[in-house]
Every structure is written in structure tokens, then in C-alpha cells.
Image (cartoon, rainbow, N blue to C red; front, side, top):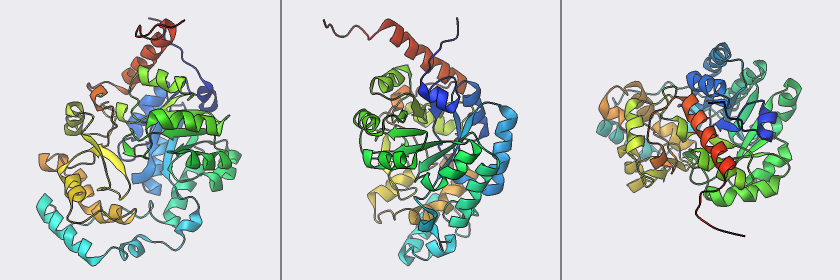
Length: 375
């Protein structure tokens, strides 16, 4: 069968074959997935939220050894570095109430995490110096694309432009999207409530066309519950020129996901992908776990970002370090969109993209399913 062609402006801007961008998914999209997606014709994206400057540099080098095609680095950024000046990981910890540290001890005991275990994850994600170091790694390596999964790129645009780095920013509403217009980014992602991971509160079907209209002529990629060719065609019908997809890649062998996590995604219904603040303090859609249930049902409400993220690091990181044990695998952070019933089989990243494009082109060629008549 001849290879399908599907081309939009986003393909031209990002220099990719298909208008399919893999979401950053910090912690779940490491070099193997980035390489596989880019090699398959999409834009692979490394979620840098869990990286330190030295490991990010290593990861970029590994990606470049695996592919000569464009890829992106996704960073969580502030609107301005001024927002982070004078902040340190230790300083942030001082704002966490003492009773939450006592409660953390109870939770460690409940989940079998040693009381003396403390996460060694550095402070790159929460401090201005750490953030600047991560950015500098991307600039020094002249990465093809820089994406802001959170925050704004305006204060970075001169540096990106001078190095030929393309930019992507995410908006969950028109107000945020217009800030990205002001920053003159290259592509804006309109992300709906249906999405896995950190997400907004407006549904995909409603938010995409509103953002498309508001940001013209900047091309828009739709995100949120899109997991097959039908979703891609629907995004195009809404005025988007591509898609930003994360959950559909989670069942691939290249994703940093355990077999237990994959099994739980396959078994999940659309009602199991819930919004919780149990992990980071921000609204995040993931599969319900015993750990999220404790925070969602009390007795203590989650703290806000970044304090709750810092508080839960010990349990989250211990679980990842001991994921070979069933009791810890079952509490791993497992982001997933509301398209869970479409995430029903294991496929390689290439198969996922090929199937999406094949289905989308078939629909575009043959027209809408025969469900309506009109004149």
C-alpha cells in the first residue's frame, strides 16, 4: 500500500511529514519515544520536567543519535523569570504547614515508604537558576523546537529566533492563547478538558474553534481526547491544522510506562480518568489510584502548586524506584485522557501514527460516514 500523505501548514512550520505532535508528558516521554515519533513522521517531544540540566543535555544527544528529524523539548516555564527570583527548593518547603509533614509520615507508613527516604530530585523545576539552566541547555543545543507545556515563551523568543528554534505554547482558553499571540509563537495548542495530564476546564470541542478564531493566522494544534484518525479529522473540521496527542502513545513500547500501567489503561473506562490535584496541586487528569483517592477524599485537601508537588515527591519517587513491586506499580502516576476506551491495544509509535493518518485520509477521501443526508 502506498504511503498516505497528509499535509498542513503545521508540517511546513515544524518541518515534519504529518501534523501529529506528541505531547511532552514529563516522565513518560523519554528519548526512545521521541525518536520513534519523529522517525514516523510526527514531532517527538521530550518532557523535560523531570530532567536536570546534565541529564537533559545527555537526552538531547541521545535523540540526535537516533534521528536527524525535528523534535521538541517541552519545559514548564513561568510567565517571567521575575516570578521565580529568590526562590529555592528549601525556601518553598518552609511554606508547607507542619501538619502536612506529619500527615506525610502517616502516608509513607500506609504505602510502605521508609520514613527516612527522601527524594533526591533537584530543584531545576522550581527555581529560577534551575529553569535558566534547563533553557540554556536547549539554546546551546539549538533544539529544533521548544514547547512550553506551562507558562509563556515571550521572554525567550529573541533567543529562540536568533537560533532558528521554532516555538509551541499551550492555551486552555482564549485569554491564555492571546498571550501566546502577543509572544508571537509559531504554533498554539488549544487544549481541552478531555486531555490527560495537566489540563484546563473547557471541553475540546468547544475550546478549539474559539482559539482558532481568536489567534488567526497562527496555526493551531488541537489537544484533548484525540486518539485516532476520526479525532484528527474532527480537529481539522474545527479549524485546527494538526493535533497534540499524549495518551495514545502510552501503550507503545517506546513510552516510559510499566506494563502494569498499560494494563490499567486498557482496562479503564472514560469515567476512570479523573481530575485530581493529588500529585502536583494543579488539576491533572489521570487514572484513579489509592494514592489519589486519599487526597481527593480527605482528610486534608491538596496544597497548591508547587507545594503539593514538593510534598508528594518522596512517595511518588519511591514508587517509581520500586515499580517492579506490584503495590508500588499500582500507585504510579498514570495520566490518561477521557479517550480511554480508544486506548485498547499495544502498538508501536509508528503503528499508532500510521493508523491515525490512514484512517484520517480515508475519511477525507470517502467523506463523512453515511449518518446524514443533506442537499
